[in-house]
Image 1 (cartoon, one colour):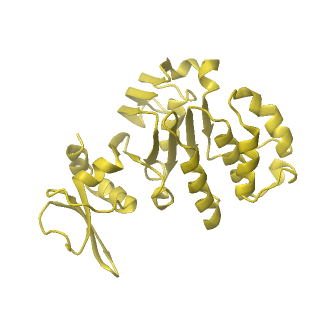
Image 2 (image 1 turned 90 degrees about the vertical axis):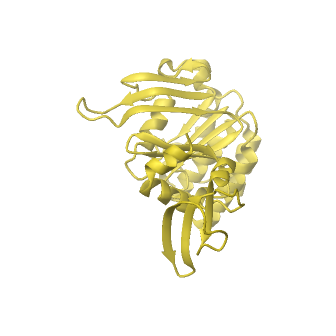
Length: 278
């Protein structure tokens, strides 16, 4: 559904954010795009959706060049940006004005999503709502568009703990084999139970793009060497419970994926992770 080939991009001539980024994302998955603040996650999402033009390389979305931003493509992609703009409109007026751009928009679903988030369509004007209420309203709208591609940039920022739980539940129910969902975040714990594909971006390159199954096949997440003493240790983190480790899974032992440990391992031992998942 989305394919990036040899993408180069920079906001100035003398400094590129991306030098040679290639990435393929397919339907039927929820991707977690992880990276530090300033790693270029938002810029990469904008290139995918045709809001930024690469200096070189090609961004293809639904078999079309993303920079063309054709109407038949735009009606099948929704990009919920972190920097929210909401007009001075009530919720019902907002839906009436913007839902026609998305042929599969489902009003019943939208109303149900609002109820799940404990919101009411009779709330006041959108721009007068709290940050969290705005975010929940736009998440409900994004899900109700039923676009083939749904891109969300830091969607859990501004949500309280119960709302984050509701978000994960709604995202899981909205995903299916025809839909590609990309969620960009630096708050990795918010995605732990949701995603099935992990893409990690750092210093203008992709450090990792793999399924959670492939990750646990190749990496062992362990505490105090309780499972095996064999395998190269890629990352260690001390805690009150002991030393958490990420190591090569030479004996293919089952372990639970820890996104935070994985991310820290990728940041601290990039070349080893890249080589392991070639």
